[in-house]
Image (cartoon, rainbow, N blue to C red; front, side, top):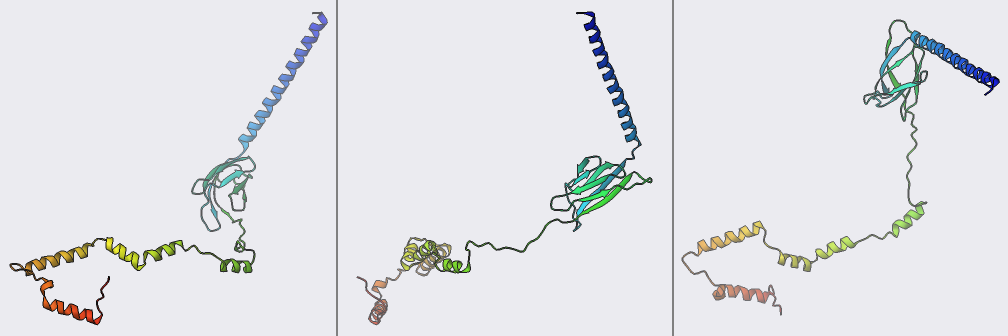
Length: 225
């Protein structure tokens, strides 16, 4: 390495050192000025609730400080708390409602501020619309007249209510509690009434045969082959 090259390398290193030193000094001064500027700002504790135009609380409303680009989300009851500065613009936004802004006032008396922010509804209500599967009333009338109703359930119910089906069901159906009680009571009464004697046999009762023949002659009874 020649002497000239060594001198050039030293000069380049010194230039880089002075550049780094200048940037460090400038950044330090700027940082101190920023800190001093922030220290001189007045802080305000902003608290409040967010409600709608019907005075119902709006949960989880976005509260955003557009000046400092900081924000919070209100809780379930619409309550929020945010540290701001006088002159900051605070924006409240909730889905379905118009955004609202509030400028923190300049005050020297207190560092706390409470407010109730009311948001207006931002929805449009249109006239109700009835949607039909037919493009015209004529086609609806034609479809209504030619409508085929499925009568499978009705036909099945009619078959189950036919006299033959009812007789079959009645023959296979056992006695209910009331019928069983009546039969049992009648048997007990017969036993008590004919206790100590022979129960009558209607096959040998002339009066029963006489009533039978009279009913047969009048046509009240029919003989089925």
